[in-house]
Length: 89
Image (cartoon, rainbow, N blue to C red; front, side, top):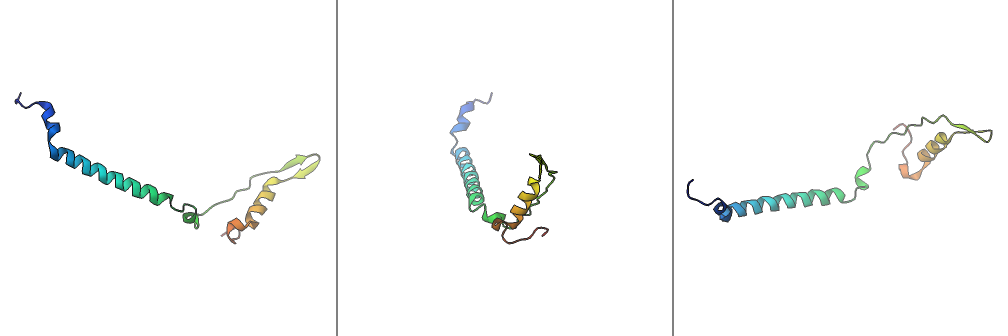
């Protein structure tokens, strides 16, 4: 034993100052990235490529052929939410 109590190390101010600075910098970086990621998330998806796959085979309902996949695909392509882009771009 060297004669120095083990808990005396915890009383050293440089140790606490360094930990405080490191913790503060990490908290600041976390806040900046977290806030930066949540500012206008819909605006950052403007050029996000999206694929639409219609694998629906349709079916018979009440003796009539119904193909909801084609209806939904046509509706999405014509929708104003697409931003005027046509399918295939």
